[in-house]
Amino acid sequence: MRIGELSRRTDVSVASIKYYLREGLLAPGELTSPNQAHYDEAHVRRLRLIRALVDVGGLSIAGARDVLAAVDDDQVSLYDALGRAQAAVMARTEPVDDDATERAGKAVAEMVERRGWITSEKNPGWRAAVDVLAALDRLGGERVAGLLDVYAEAMEGVAGHEVEAVVDRDERERSVERVVTGIVLGGALITALRGMAEQSASARRYGAGAAPDAGAV
Amino acid sequence: MRIGELSRRTDVSVASIKYYLREGLLAPGELTSPNQAHYDEAHVRRLRLIRALVDVGGLSIAGARDVLAAVDDDQVSLYDALGRAQAAVMARTEPVDDDATERAGKAVAEMVERRGWITSEKNPGWRAAVDVLAALDRLGGERVAGLLDVYAEAMEGVAGHEVEAVVDRDERERSVERVVTGIVLGGALITALRGMAEQSASARRYGAGAAPDAGAV
DNA sequence: CATGTATGGAGAGTAGAGCTATCCGAGTTG
DNA sequence: CAACTCGGATAGCTCTACTCTCCATACATG
Image (tube, rainbow over all chains, first blue to last red; front, top):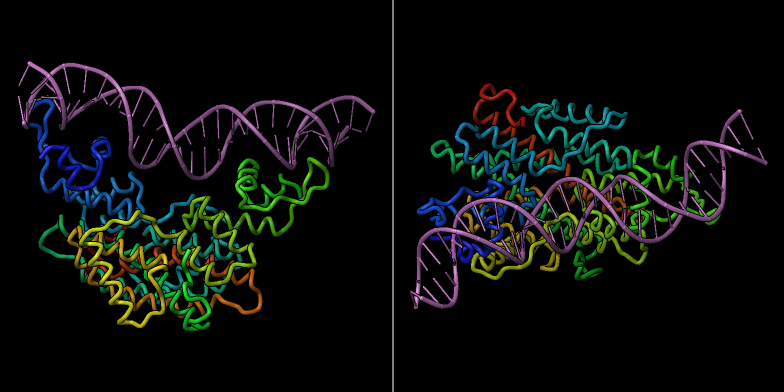
């Protein structure tokens, strides 16, 4: 198919498709003449993946390009893909060096020790966790910070299931794609469900009748 | 203190402070003369909160203004604050109307029914959950979608603890602030810990020695 | 008390992100 | 053969989150 049909099939404007081509998120079609190209089902699929990562997962175009490059590059291991997808979904901050950060670093290291997690300070999540705890420290948010182990336990349970579900020893490319969608869309799903669960928990705790449309905007 | 000291105390540039004043994220200082104003500890605190929401929580300035307005407005209930904070952290998409969305809507409704959650379609999380499941449906991501109940159960556990930790019947304003930081920063913390837990789980499953710096970028 | 630096407030300017529009010469369709 | 569409390149646009400049004060220092 040519670009017009690709656009119709995916509900992405021709201009945007051309933009993604330029930015390297989407492979060029096969040229049949200097100004005519063929696109196939793989392009349809890729475009849907791009929109899912960007619209639903909230990735930037640059972030999406990064993780998609990992999907395409068969030198990239599942571990690397995991790290890249994580880096793409986490807020990046430049490091500060204060007491709060130091205390936060210690708290994370102790938690990892306590739970016996096999991870390192190079994992994007480690840095991000330290940043959050440091910010909470500066704000006096000790009640939230006190839930560190609650959160950690919940994520430990989730992560075990995710790894089982997502990895498949046979097909590398599909596996990497599942890892990426798992991290990005799974994260969005967790956020969404947390919102619903919180509304439910507070309704149950403080009376369902109090605010029937509670949580609506 | 005057604006210069406020800037030094918080590591936020004077120009940015003025911008936050203009955008209504930060209340004006008390004027002692037409071009001289006083700022106090509340301003320091608020600025730190702004930076935490924006830098660590990834909120936009408009999103931060929204949730901070809820903190300041004593007409806003804890329920409303919950909904506003949720809306600010979730990716907003315009609704599509296709088969995938319909199936996703059914899956969410059934899950809510099954678990007996007290929530409604008006909760921002509900819409977001439907969007994610629909995107997974379009991508053939059934393995991730199959974890819906795993995620839901984990979030159910987390939400219970969060509501207990965060709400305080006595001080409304502080409570609202805790709700907001809990949703926004707690969400960032969950994302970070999930990343670490995933690295750990995959290292444990597929051999820790395989990739010592696994997950690094 | 003169002189230099800081201040509040307003407006304009800036850089980057993510498209969108226009143009062109070359195919394709009816 | 006329009207449409294409691939590719470039320019332009809108929005966000600052950042800069200006000016008439105000405070601070010798």
